Length: 260
Length: 260
Image 1 (cartoon, chains in turn orange, green):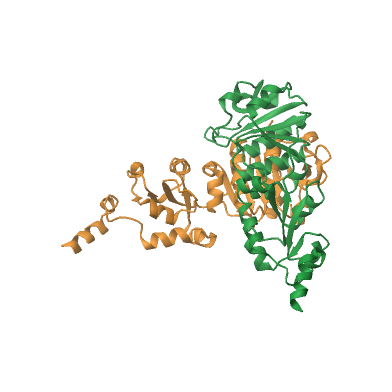
Image 2 (tube, rainbow over the protein chains, first blue to last red):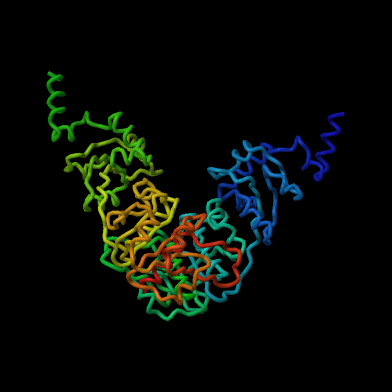
């Protein structure tokens, strides 16, 4: 008898979700753990989002939900809802304090985007927190397109998703050969560089690309050659020892200058 | 014979440091571990700095060195140098990749600072990375004084020290009752607030206090009442969902506006 019952629930997805036997499976645990690595995200075309607020922003966006695990019943109307215990959520969460829900979304297909308006391009930004902050800044300053060199940290990295706080749903992010991309487009190209001219005194176009470099090495030589204008944020006072501003704070100041 | 030799090295500090028997003691390990907690930093009036570059900035500042542990001989001229193995450094380091040296410095005595120029005040900033970034920004923009409410994260917290990258040696930081402090000073007070006037259109004084709030709750009501002008960074595009900018990036943009 019980055999048939299990067969029934297995065939019927809509019943399975409310079933008390339903909880986190070994395969799901394995999948979620694997999605911490870029190669598995690319293989499965899936990524992880955590926390009620951020998950809700993704649910209300064009991103397609694959599975949702939660300790709360408020998501039980979703077909792919799986109820988990606090212990189970802790097991799959990458947060110190898991926040009630972990969802897996599909990575959308790449599409070609025609350059328009102000664009930010990143040449090898490594730190997930920095990329997350830059995505949030693009959202704030109405920058719709973010072009990343292939060496830039993956925007579906869990830490990036958490740091960008839902802004990821509103920005078009593409990974490409940045040198090739910049060579092909004809709008003015500005590059953040310590040796550049004072950004406060530079004429900044409203249709332009702003290129920001890697945390330690700045902009690659090959990209430096294609760029029209180098801009820098001047130092104040006699703080000659402060080496440079963090790439995320420098992006904040530069985007503010472009938009003010 | 060996007994006397040990006695000799124990009495003679200048020999002890080159002695191969000298390495990390249990008490030192305990002290360093304890210094991760604020109460022990306050009790011992000591804090930890790591990494060659940052330690060197502290050595060239007015901070007084207590002890220095390194895998490198380049610090062996210092009286308080203790050579450690890679394994020992890993044990005491709070970095994922320890960088050759860990030093303990003395927390300087508090002194009264007369308000002058542009001052930044923090009302309960919690995140060590944010405080570190703000210290670095003060350094860049020539802000000499940073006033923290007593609820703000300790500036000698290891993560703050690492994130501020030596800028801590150039900024005067005081912890105080912020409400009382702001009530007593007569220079113009600006507060970062979502409801404030457009900072790009506000007259910003060169002698002023800029108050930034807590990551989740913003500015306390009691402080809101004392302030002269509320300023905000306007949103661009139709990103009504982006809740707010991170406190460190907002500080970056606001300091840039004060100085440009």
